[in-house]
Length: 165
Image 1 (cartoon, one colour):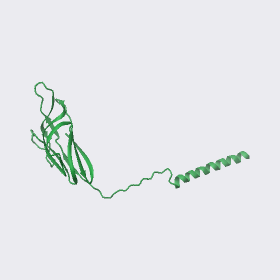
Image 2 (cartoon, one colour):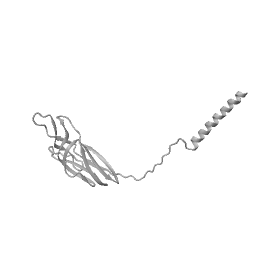
Image 3 (cartoon, helix red, strand yellow):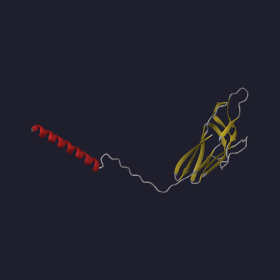
Image 4 (cartoon, helix red, strand yellow):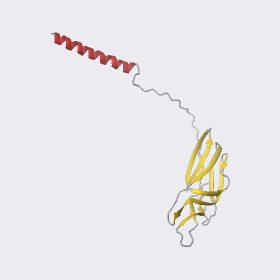
């Protein structure tokens, strides 16, 4: 009888402990993660237009040379995005536009020097590349990439966009 009484006490104690823990977890929000977020219903969109030369052809090596790095011809488009049909275009257009921008500037990587006009503006950059060299010469028949990065401020926030040649 004493053993049965002891087992009963332990069983009741265990159930009471589980009931207390369960009620604490369910009713006092213990163990829950709460997050408050404010979301604006107004959508603000600042579309951009960003064109760079699709391809830059390099001057072929002379003599027994096997590498090239100097810009020669450009395959690009005009400000409306239409490809130009000139086969020996000796300048390449770089164009950026964002209606809400307050400032913008363009930089590049993958080329050691690029000769071009204005590289900054408020809402628009519309300039031409007239010369340049790759950062390192490449073998004939291979390719390299130039990354163009525009940094612009719109709506009080600084943003970046990249385009590739």
